[in-house]
Length: 351
Ligand code: 13P
Ligand code: SF4
Image 1 (cartoon, rainbow, N blue to C red):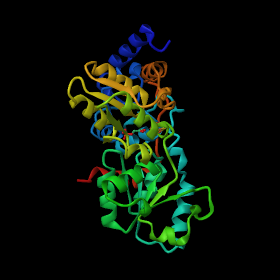
Image 2 (cartoon, rainbow, N blue to C red):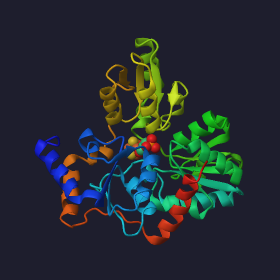
Image 3 (cartoon, rainbow, N blue to C red):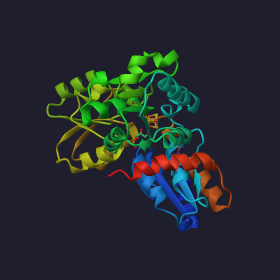
Image 4 (cartoon, protein in one colour):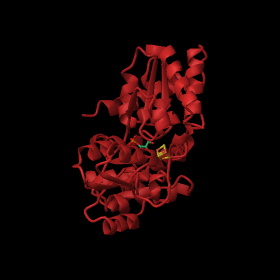
């Protein structure tokens, strides 16, 4: 079993053998059995910065999903090796925007007469989508800086193509920048012209890619109502990947790092219903026993790809590295790295 004490001991020993040559990053959605071995935990923004700030580590073991490991490879020196303990740990949202589809969309926009469009991609996207943004005057954003990234984008141009999460794009544009829902259109990559008229493509301020997170998409406005009825005074705290109808009903909205901070700073005895991945919500409930922390859904909803990184995979990766064998290395080619780094650096330079 994953919680086998023998595996815990093997991970500890392998880590000790690697010493300072190793740096382990863990996203907040990782299992507890894995997170206990992370040198740093964080949301995707914090982890990108941490990866960039460890030039001394020969191996970065990334306990998270594929696009995060790619970003770490882009932001670290050539000599540093980034390892993802299970290569099947992808992200279904990132997979919803392929490079060819985005190139086609760019042509569709050009043919429709849209000019001064700035492409912004959520961190949850492949390296070649980030590179596309870098090459075309755009940037990356995460859930902790989407507002600043969009403000920046509207200083550079008149329209934004937001990839691949329509919900983060819409929620940020409407709730943070004060745009209206009518300012946003959804581009469907599976339909001719994205399913939009040339007028819409030319005039919409926000062109939202039709992508979403299947984990956060499950939270419903009805669940918010039920919680409010059941627990008077409950605080509803959700991630901005949730649907707009859910986010508008919530009391607090923010990245995983923000969610943790908010619950940590809340008074003892307060009640929270949280709309984000279940590993994190369970961990918060354990960390703050004096506060009531519930999951904002009746069903169990882990991110299945985050969960692929389990203790056996971590032990295998660490022991292989300690034996001098680099496994599951994530590498991004130099051309993609160059342009993706341009987009990531624009994000890291945001005020
Ligand atoms: P953050 O880490 O930016 O909050 O994003 C959550 C997420 O879905 C990562 O895949
Ligand atoms: Fe992707 Fe959603 Fe999982 Fe995050 S929670 S890695 S966005 S599928």
